[in-house]
Length: 251
Image 1 (cartoon, helix red, strand yellow):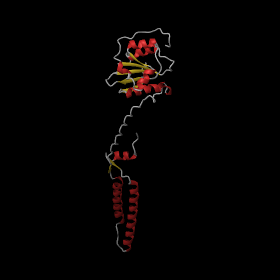
Image 2 (cartoon, one colour; image 1 turned 90 degrees about the vertical axis):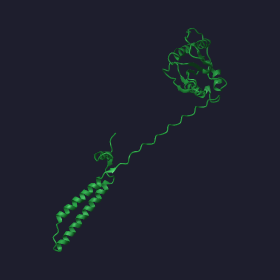
Image 3 (tube, helix red, strand yellow; image 1 turned 30 degrees about the vertical axis):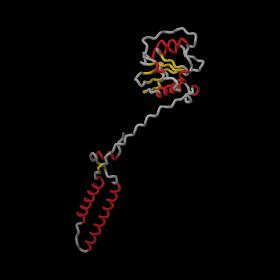
Image 4 (cartoon, helix red, strand yellow; image 1 turned 180 degrees about the vertical axis):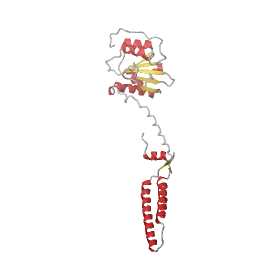
């Protein structure tokens, strides 16, 4: 950052000092006084000479000029102590926004896209007492769309499937999620939430792996608080995850 002129002058005259702000105006005034004094001395000398009194004009004028010069220097460059800079008052951090209210009317599956669905599920987690709720879905999310921590300290990893009612969640979806929710995301509770439903092989895989399933009907009940949050009925992570490679329905 480039220093200001005032700061440069302050450094030349010592710490905590600066040139007087009205130095230019004072210099003009001093020069005017100097001219007036010289004119007065000249008039006085002429009057004295007319009366036959010899007046030492040059020495007196020289002394007057020197005195005025000293006064000018002290006047224009007298150090002025800077007003100490006071720290700006700290800005108060904005209060965290209240969790969004999510009710049966507010949660309209048809009115949101996949991204909005993830945020709606996150809002349900906040409403039901979770902390550290994050929406992390996107490219490279490795199956996790929402992360949360329950009131009793368990880490919940949720995957959200915003599907049409006739587009069921298949076992391959569950296998991909089951392969990362515990090993990569270190879930204590893994939940897959969809607006549609699950195929039979997908449901079997989820139940075997301990992954909580929330289909469209269960989601409506959770949203309307007719059913508890999905992590309330699920324990910890399973020891192993079975494989499932055959399925006649949508993968």
